[in-house]
Length: 317
Image 1 (cartoon, rainbow, N blue to C red):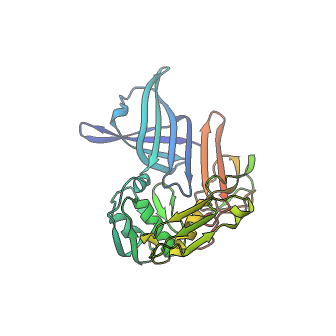
Image 2 (cartoon, helix red, strand yellow):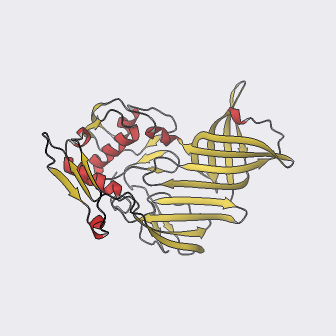
Image 3 (cartoon, one colour):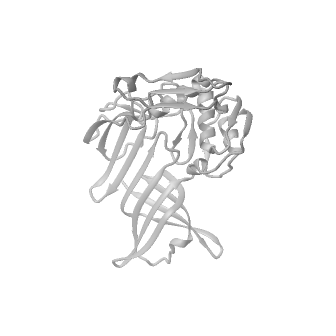
């Protein structure tokens, strides 16, 4: 299984692409609740081509001839190594920009996922699920991000949390998500985990006066005798349904609290929200993915979260 790196480099005439196939090691990661893919890797080349890290404009990565990453050159180093040179690359996908840009604060009317996001950030490398429902209004708060606006839209339109499919496509539903067969995988590790460090137990939202008439409580926090209370001012983003807004805050605090996962040899081309079949996670949706490669081969670790957004069963588009 080959991991190849393609760099877009600026030159005197504009730009040029260079591809490197001798990979010394790599890590590729993506997860529900994380609005981008991340890649880091080390590649060797014989040094005949003059390459400067300062000229790198874009990072593309393919694994097993499948394009899995396209993003910004967060960190690139070119150094002498033996008889050639070594390229070290760290890159995050372009959808990260959704979480790094503030939208114009206003009420957005009659929007889809695509129209809401592109009204605030236009980027040729970011794509969106289509079609998605038209929502009459989505309030965008001052100081929020385009990704937060996308989250608010998705919760209102479908009750789902958005995620990134393949390289830079923002998805709302599981429509088109495949099934991956793990029945013949060589499993090297199986685990389950709990992380309750962020879970909230009781949340309240202010009404139109000084009272807090809206409230929501988490039973799993109570079972663990965890008390974490939050009081929120009236949030215009959830004015259409403050109770739904509070429930989202509880559900988000429960993200990935309980998880089960495994590591196996190779990669079966799964992606976020694909459904596992025939293995230890059979029947569960995959919510986190980590692929590593090196001298010992390629290994994939997949996680399934036991939470509201991770194991949803809708198939609407």
